[in-house]
Image 1 (cartoon, rainbow, N blue to C red):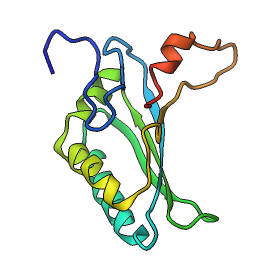
Image 2 (image 1 turned 60 degrees about the horizontal axis):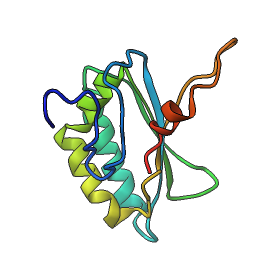
Image 3 (image 1 turned 90 degrees about the vertical axis):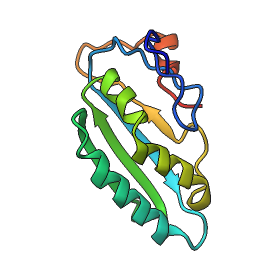
Image 4 (image 1 turned 60 degrees about the vertical axis):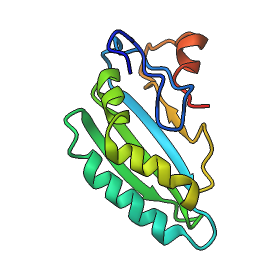
Length: 138
């Protein structure tokens, strides 16, 4: 990525992801991954390996993986990064590249499986459509 680029556009398999590095607020997100039939165990192991590595990143505030009780093989990854810059750095790490490269073999996840979120608080206003749309991976 060129050093003068102020956005992240080269997520390993989500080329449309744009995140302003200037956004200083925390970057919460949820990823939803459904395992391919018979591969839930392998996907669970890959997620556990990723979680252990990502939690060591200095910009990672939260990385918690869940499996749905009512839908075996459906996994939810709750991630929060300290800032957009921390998230951008996360996207460039080898563990993330390796995990994303392995996802098609174990999961039916599609672009859009990772959704960046904005917290709703008392008195908060909905962000502009352009900023909101920039946070959804297509």
